[in-house]
Image 1 (cartoon, rainbow, N blue to C red):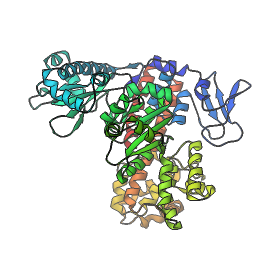
Image 2 (image 1 turned 180 degrees about the vertical axis):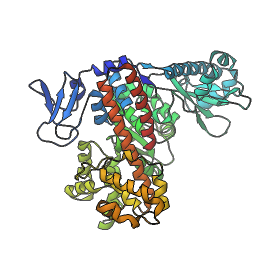
Image 3 (image 1 turned 90 degrees about the vertical axis):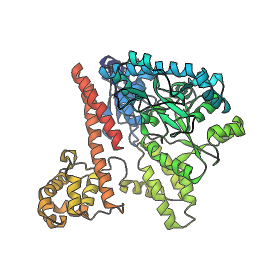
Image 4 (image 1 turned 60 degrees about the horizontal axis):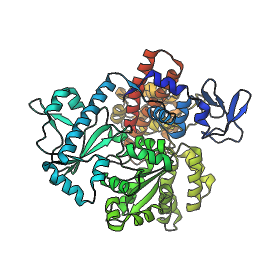
Amino acid sequence: MARFSPSMLERIRSINIANIIEPYVELKLKGRDLWGLCPFHHEKSPSFKVDAEKGFFKCFGCDAKGDGVTFVMRQLGFSYYDAVIYLAEKYGINIELEGEENIRSKDIIALHEEIQKISRKMFYSLEGEKAKEYILSRNFDDDDFNEFGIGYLSSNVDYSSIYKSFSKEVLYDSGFFKESQYKTPYSRFFSRLMLPIRNITSSIAAFAGRSLDGSNPKYLNSAESSVFHKGSTLFNIDKAKNAMKQNKQALIVEGYFDVMRLYKNGFKNVAAPMGTALTSDQINILKRYAEEVTVMFDGDSAGEKAAFRSLERFAETSLFPKVIFLPQEDDPDSFVLNNGIDKFYELYNKREDLFIHMIKRLSASSKDDFNIKLSRFKAVTNMLAKINNPHVRDYYVDAASEIFKLKKENIYEDLKQNRYKKNMALSKNNTGSMYLCEMDFVACLSRLPIDIIDNLLTDFNLDMINDIEIKNILKIMLANLSKISDIREITHELGNQFVELAMREIAEDDIYKDALKNKNQIELNFLKKRQNELIEQMRTTSDKVMQVNILQELNSLTKQIAGKK
């Protein structure tokens, strides 16, 4: 991910922090500072202070603190990169990047523009007749061809001018070309209808090609590159973002032609992920522009399951979507063609909250059997535990309580004990705060064979552990693994804390899988902690070289965190 220029970051820091915070917190002047109710925890008396002169906020209740970028990260669930982009776009600051990677990215964009010219010219040539007939048969016209830049590439395109204009490094890095066995470049696309995939700034980041001769895959995208990451890209976001800003709504469908059909019929706020389920990065992009997101799924059981699976990513960003379930035999494109846009509007106007739909379906499936009801409610509790924003969580706790006929206070008690209550569910002891995943990791190790424990701890960095007693337990384990055949042989050395953890109840039937999950969470917590430290360093240093180094490490951490998720 490219780096922001120091001058751009300086302009971001110059934004009045009160202006950033006031849409979310009612601030009142007391002395020289502004005070309000903290948005990150429940409180009745204001303990959230904003120092507009210094550009920082601090809550004296939950110890949340930081600058404007930090506030946006916490309030909207954004990564550092997304928070900076969000503020730049909101306050009209030009996005400026720097470094060699940025130069290479510009060359790739220029390459894509040249390829687009070739594909457009070929689409309107004799060679493109088949492609044009195909798209016309789907009831699209010249206006649509121009709107979406539809083109065509045959199997015998002459790329000689491109080979002369761009280095092989740029050709291969673009994701459009491959290297042959003869060390020469060749296109990944041939005999395909071509759709340019544009980024938020309308530059062509990649291409999607639709097979016309029946060959597989039916759709082929450019390989990932410095300018194209599938999980961070939405088809049509370049055009849809303005409509999303205006009506505060986003409509997400599955396919390219679904987007084109709905856009043609007035839904200018429509976009699609790149052939995969929505990612957290894509949801965060939508949150920059829209307050409400609607997703569409097939109306069969598979569609409903896919919808429920998508909830986890939304929960992580504290944004739950509305949902529309289509008839089983239709996608948005075919539905509009067969039934007309008015019927689609009728469906759209009946959209419902996806999480509440899930809660209702789980409740209905319990068939008034209380034991089944409690079993079904575990899925609701796990989802509630993923929500960071306390106000959003309260809203859905109220809904779940009413639908399942369970007491709210009992639901909150379940959440306190739920071991998936996000990254930090802490119990206080004499060493301070302790991550729940650290306790669960040791609890799992206490039940596993020595060789499996050794495998899990071989590459484990003890510096990732926050609790001193947990760290000491793991040190003793590592020191004795080669000498014992069962972990219980050193129970005395491991101490009372280990005994308590060994008696913990484990939710997963597969203990090894559970251990891996907790190990991954420990690593994720460590990466996020380092990310916060770097953000604080960025705030306090004016050394340009150090800022560049910090941004490089932040970009690396962002990718590692995304991989862990």
